Image 1 (cartoon, rainbow, N blue to C red):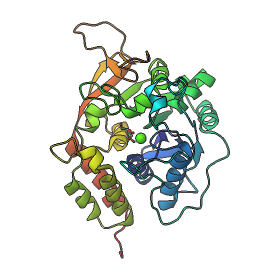
Image 2 (cartoon, rainbow, N blue to C red; image 1 turned 180 degrees about the horizontal axis):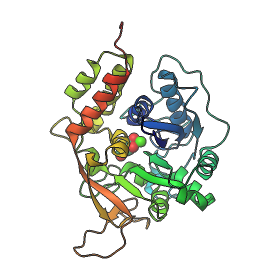
Image 3 (tube, helix red, strand yellow; image 1 turned 120 degrees about the horizontal axis):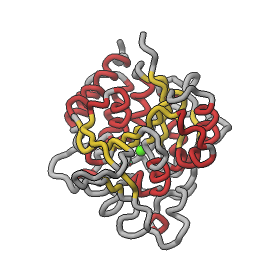
Image 4 (cartoon, rainbow, N blue to C red; image 1 turned 60 degrees about the horizontal axis):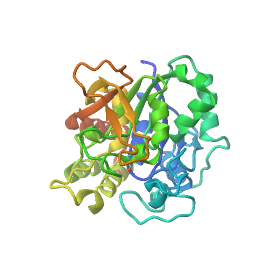
Length: 335
Ligand code: BDR
Ligand code: CA
């Protein structure tokens, strides 16, 4: 049997992160070495608890450990004048949020008894990467990049250890989700994303342009529910949770992106993405474009390539990948 792909997922589990986590734990292709959590969709205490809930839901607590990471972005909330400081996100501990795309409190799973590990995400990332072979471990950050940037700054010797970083974040042709130009993960911690983009690692960016191209529909959610296992039922509920009125209001069709799962899928099947090799940076000038990912589209430009940036994705392949994992790995109710 081929060696499994060693990955670490860095998540801000609200709802779509939870689907990606389930798929990473269920699919035999991945060797999920651990999960680090970060402030983002919810305060980090809740993203950590939601992550623990998903691990326990799949009964993987002996194999997969959870490490709590950064509670706030690096820079964006330091000045009282930035939009990140003025809006009620990123959330500080104890700040409540309205129910929306993500569960405001926690993902409803039957039980929640397991605990996070004592080390912080940053310490564990550094220790784990330093102990690995060069280019052995792939990072899949699907929330703000705070933990990864902090680990890189604290110990740059981890950089050559990283095989690839597949990031869910950013937007190019498609409008941003938190401002005119900025996607949520990039907008929460623009400086962290820029540190990672300048690291020299092999990077694939999975932005909104790709995740909205690989949308799911309510019919897809029903196909998933029809698989008939508790795991498939949970995934269907999480998909529908993300497809709330808030997200769908501005759309003619009901298209539900599962952003974070697409990044995971691309680790195994890069061809699910339509990418361009390009030079990409995040705007950190605290103006209108703060947090916007900007790619160099000038014909003949010779700026050095620092990533593969996805401008589209294969929706059918992505949906079939999700369904295939759930059909293969989960048992029908009563079976
Ligand atoms: C990203 O923001 C969050 O809402 C999702 O979890 C995803 O990682 C999409 O912009
Ligand atoms: Ca996320």
